[in-house]
Every structure is written in structure tokens, then in C-alpha cells.
Length: 201
Image (cartoon, rainbow, N blue to C red; front, side, top):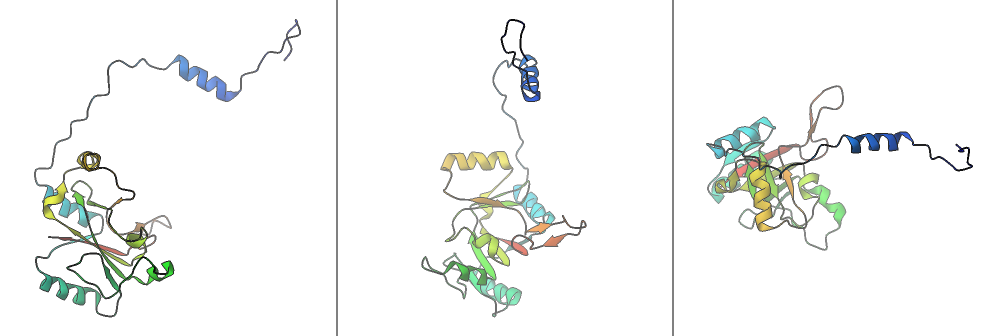
């Protein structure tokens, strides 16, 4: 639009108008952000067990290698490929750094170590495994977790990570993979493991 004096008047578009109104009505910030006070669980272990079951996972407590061997055979059989990153709990399927990545989809059962568990949502933080895809490409995921490493909530979880430092890669896993996007029908294993079992030691 031209002014009478020959100048050009800039017309504000809708984006500029919205941002201008936001700037005018932006509230003043007084003081810092207050810390959120979250109460810790009275019984974190019991709450964790309940949360794992609620999200479709299984929870077990196995104290000896003998019991463990029996459980693996009776639960998964001897025909499935069991990959383990726990030295005391050997599987029958081994991989190394030179493995063809396409071979990883042959893993039926993956046994990994969990760093800590979160009582409020049954999540387990995992970060130590040879290939990032392993917890997601396996059909069945088993996480070994110490009972003493269960904390109350995600606030404590991130404080834990901040204290020890974030690894190059890690993730919280809560329950098996599931979706109900199609016709509201719950399907397990759509994007990852069909089952998840947390074994407390």
C-alpha cells in the first residue's frame, strides 16, 4: 500500500499480528521457578511390581542360576535364539561387532541389564547393549534388575541420570510394545517386543 507521500506501508500478516498480541500480553515473571516437591513411594518395590503388570509386563524374582536355566527352557524352549549380555546367564545365540546387522532379526529372546527401575510407571532404564536395535527387534525382552535399584518416580530418575551423566544412548522401557490405533484393538508386538519380563535379583 502506498502512502500519499509515495512511501510504502508494510502490511502485517496474521503471524505478525499474533506475535504482536502475545508480546503485548506477555505476563511478567517474578522470581525463579519453584521446585516441585514430590513424595517418594512408601514401598517402591511393591509399586514397581504393580506398575509393570499394569503396562502388560511380567515380574519375576529369581535368585539362582539353576532356577534361571529352568525358567528359560520352560518359558521359551530350546529352539528359540536366546541372546544374553549377562555373563552369568548365557544364551544360545551370540553376536559380535563384525556381525551382519541383518542377522539381528534372528534374536527371539534378548536378555539385558537394567540400570534402575521407576516405581510410578514400571519403566526400566537400559543403556548397555551391543547394538541399539536389540531391545526393539527381539520378540521377547528380559531385563535383569536389582531390587535395590528401584526408585520412586521420574523426577528421581532424571536426578539419577544427571548425577552419573547421560550415556551416548539409553532409553526407558515400560512394558511390551503395544498399540490400539486400529479399530481400538490392542495389539502387542506392533513396533517391538511382544513380551517384556523384568527379573529382580
